[in-house]
Each structure stands twice: as C-alpha cells, then as structure tokens.
Length: 212
Image 1 (cartoon, rainbow, N blue to C red):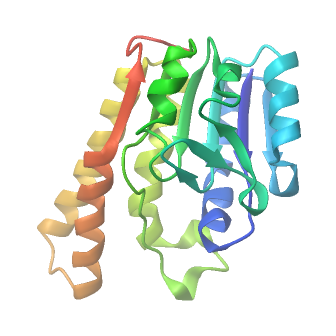
Image 2: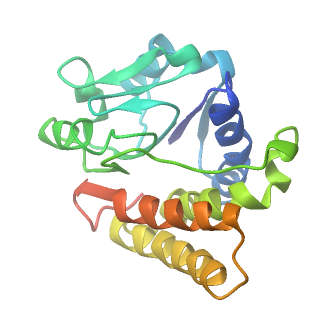
C-alpha cells in the first residue's frame, strides 16, 4: 500500500497538493492501493492509525518540515524523531519538505525504516503569482515539482531508491540546462539558483536498493 499526505492550507501546500495528482494517478495505473490523506485528513491521528494498522510499504509526506519532523494540515506535526518515527519501520519514505533529511531521516533508519529520501536543508521552489489558481499550469513551479514527482513515480514503477533519485537528478539537470542555454531573465536566474540548490540537498538514508 501507498500512503500520501497532501495538506492544502497555504500557498506552498496548495501547490504540493495539486502536483501530487500525477503521483496518485501513477499509483492507480500501477494498481497500487492508495491511502490519500488530503487537506484536513492529513493529521497525526490518521497517519498513525494507518501506519499501525495497514500494510503500508511506501509513504510520501508533503508539507512543512524541520530537521526532526514533518507536518501536515495546519502544520500539525505528523512524525517526529524520538516520538513516533518507529512507525516508519520497514517502509520507504519520501519527505517533500524542508530539512527532514537531516535528522528525521537517519533517526528513522535507526528505527528500521528501509529508506528515507528527503532534503538536508530547505526545499525551495518558485512559482508564478499569476498562476496560483492554476498550479498545474505554472511553468515556473513545474521546473521544481516535476523532478521531485519523478522520485515517487519511479518508486511506484518498481525502481530502486537510488535509481529514483538518479531519474530525479536527470530531470533537474534538464531544467537547469534549459535555463543555462536560454536568454535567462532575472526571475529565471533565481529559479536556476534554487534548482541547483534542491538537487544538491536531495539525499537519502538507508538501503539504496530498496524497492516498492
């Protein structure tokens, strides 16, 4: 089973919410059972209940994070080091949030998660203010969110953790190269900087050969 959280209570989570549609569609096409904890369902009690009671193998958290935690609806902490990270035992986890790859990731591996993909610093993406009502049509945001979607869609297709990261990096490289070789505007230069940043700070702990 695949569990995904996608709160939508501010502009950042609003974008992650809609860009997760592709991920859910991929899971369903691959006949994976999906637990979609969206909006106000992305809360600690529901996450803990599913992780305890259901045979969840793959987990994706969308939301704000810190070095030792990841949050859901209204920034309620869902998983925190030394509190409940043991619920991630025997699972592959991808955390699309700031900094959770720094402490929560290794702590989860110590608590027997198979693999944890995250970011060891801030995860930053740009978006076009004029497109916030139509996130999926936002070409600026797409430069960041398509490469990160590639991680989880690759895992859903049976690729290993290491291969999924390589595919994401290839997508980042393509977008970076497109900006480098074009007449780069000031806004594009900002995107370029943080595309390089996100790629550099995307990391994993645990078994790189783990698969779903």
